[in-house]
Image 1: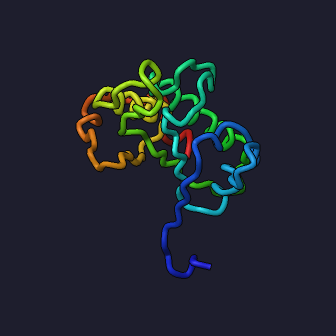
Image 2: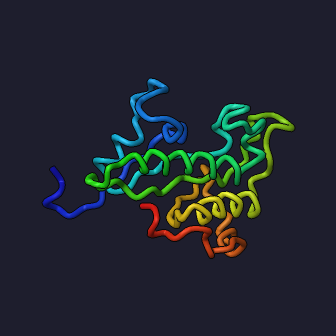
Length: 160
């Protein structure tokens, strides 16, 4: 309905939606189906929001690179199922730029420039160059971008 206005439509989805096809969590969100009808899809892949042991990572909040990499690889796997006749949304993940102290001591790390850079590196290593940082207090580690190796392991042309 909005196509005549030439506007970009995006949708934020829970990060876990990238893991499996369909609405497997029964939350009313199907990553692939939503990606077929919007221009940009934004999975909120905050490490603090994954359950202990998710993706085989004992404490996801303490492993920002690994959890972001695993979640976005799953998103790319869902995209690889596309027969090529459907245009899928650009993936622009939300990344964590806040410390999840509610997880209690030993279960989280300080989300400083290094933790944010680790998430950015995971994105770049997968050829995903767009992202949104989120911090409810609006204090962002902007300089994290200067700490990453922007020479991705794959070409951005290989994926969305």
